[in-house]
Amino acid sequence: MNFQLSEEHLMIQQAARDFAQNECLPGVIERDEKMQFPREQIMKLADLGFMGMMVPTEFGGAGLDTVSYILAMEEISKIDASVSVCMSVNNSLVCYGFEAFGTQEQKEKYLTPLAQGKKDGELYTGAFLLSEPEAGSDATSQRTTAEEKGDHYILNGTKNWITNGGTASVYIVIALTDPSKGHRGISVFVVEKNWPGVVVTAKENKLGIRASDTHSILFNDVKVPKENRIGEEGFGFKFAMKTLNGGRIGIAAQALGIASGSYELSLKYSKERKAFGTEIANHQIIAFKLADMATRIEASRLLCLRAAIDKDESRDYTVSAAMAKVFSSETAMWTSVEGVQIHGGYGYVKEYHVERLMRDAKITQIYEGTSEVQRIVISRSLLNQ
Ligand code: CAA
Image (cartoon, rainbow, N blue to C red; front, side, top):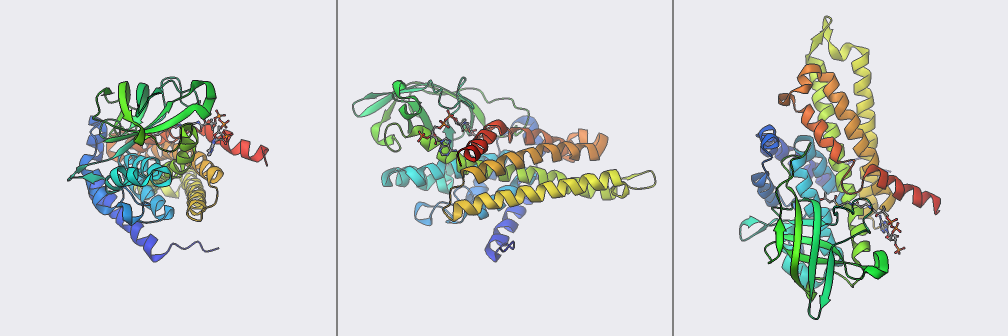
């Protein structure tokens, strides 16, 4: 087993690190405070090819592997998790969904500009609409309906907590087509945001990743052409689960980045800050905290790499992705709380960044499947063996 990254992986990691330092760090505190979407940063990320990293070049993507993707996600998330969530949703939930299950026409029309992150020089991203007011972890309890009417469907319902909801051009929408069939009566559709009957509500005022663009989306008799259904009728729940498996690798890497960001700041601070006549790193209580942070982060990184390599080598990655997500998100939460503690009073104010990382960490235990859902996925697989 070789634990060394290739030359290409190291170059991508460095490019993401430079991007995060030069493009994301300036203004990150202000964007968080004002809930200001990082449009300029996402446009530049698109120029780097990071909005469709794993999409084949024939569809406008960078044609890279999942390991490259998690390396980039970690570096960007160290500095700005609001930027990285937009990147993650576009890459793993939207582009992957089209690439793996879309028709040639759907790929040409939607995947190509989504992978480039731009169309006619303007931002062009996607969002994934599964969650509803009464369908979060219990994702089969969909209320949004798509009623067949000959050559089209009529879509009605409400979707909640949608990342990229206000800025995306394209929505992937999960909806009920046959309520009598349970999860096999759920289908998936491509809906354009500017179609009649699509309503975007006000941006959510969140605890963390405040600059990211989160909205509820309402559908009032939206006419969706039949050619915009992905796969057969009844494929929607499987589509969502399979797509989320890859999404969970992206969010695991985001959590890893938040944890590493907090650790790196805490290491630096503890070598500079003096108390009781010496740098605080010389106090064993702080040194041991740093040791535990570094150990948990390394374990998270290995789990993320394991899941990414499973995906790249076409093995089933359902469980490795769930393990990476639950462990990395809990590492992010624990590490970022300790990061604030090490910084003391400075940690509680915005200029030192660690309080934002602590707020950003929390969502990684919730979205794309809560920690409880990941434990359902892992334990069911163990018990069914
Ligand atoms: N991968 C592949 N298939 C899966 C799967 C997975 N991870 N999980 C379930 N399935 C399949 C099952 O094998 C089963 O298939 P069959 O019909 O062939 O038997 C089918 O899906 C139904 O599965 P279950 O009977 O296990 O369904 P369940 O109702 O018990 O629910 C669950 C299982 C794991 C809890 C699932 O509902 C789930 O993952 N919930 C969480 C949803 C979620 O992650 N939401 C995130 C919202 S999106 C978001 O956050 C995006 C954003 O903007 C950032």
